[in-house]
Length: 141
Image (cartoon, rainbow, N blue to C red; front, side, top):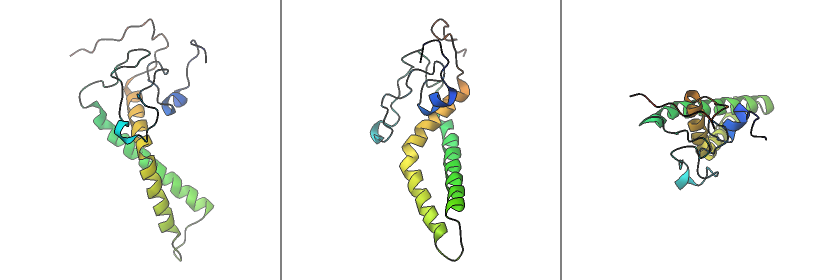
């Protein structure tokens, strides 16, 4: 990808890149399953110097995003299970889906928590194609 091309919005989000430049990594470690370091983030983006924590307590809002992602995943697995396998009151298919869904939610939780931080920050910080020449605006108190 050349420096002048605009990085894709969704790909930048899924690869957890900074929302301002869409090039710098948001997390120090790419592996979300290293649980002791799941939230290790630099203070600012290494590429454009965008601060990641916009105010004290900023990340509390990610709980709502994480909840929405978990509900969306559960609905998606339910619909896929219903279409591919089906549901019946005569056997335990619903409980097998429920166990599978619980396993997926637990297994994917570190990645979902990181993704919720990325999505939440993308709500507040917009892409700046001239991030190298534009200075960050000072936050007015």
